[in-house]
Length: 233
Image 1 (cartoon, rainbow, N blue to C red):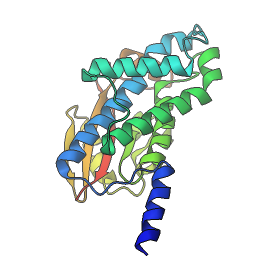
Image 2: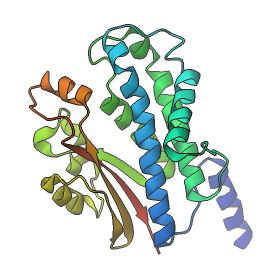
Image 3: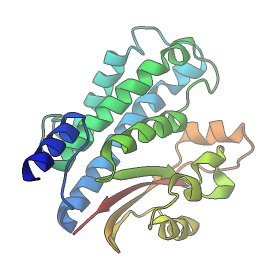
Image 4: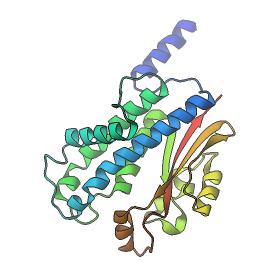
């Protein structure tokens, strides 16, 4: 029986699924911060390109997967103060590898949208949702990450809390935090999970884009939240 379990564990690990015992609270809080950094800097790569995408002014070289991955790594290094180490061990290393894989997969899949461009041809929120879908599949159950907003400020109803966090024990708490519109992060233990709740501020480009969909918002105001959910001991 012992040998069979070891063989099964090796097979699962080889398939790319992280194998981790539940973490301590401190380790989980560090992992939550890492996930926030990955998601934020990855999404900002597409945000930087938004004027060129909307104006159909990108080039194939500019939006090639390798070029975009390099931009992500450069943003990550500037934000963290050190290069992205994709060979790190533990859940942080797994999260980095899973995010890089998801990022590369999504920008490769949507190369035609990025190259052709046009107004709202490929917006940061859509990109982020696609990447998180792949990231969560790879990292389940060690880490799950969500990007969501208040119902009355959603362009796409599929990103509502009750949909993206369906089945999560943190959904109700996240919903309550978002109603306040507070901009301070909340990182704490909640039940058997550590929750990293990171409010996002609306950038000028977001406000302008959302205005075309009928939303009246203000730059710097609450614009939804990133949430990391990590089981702990």
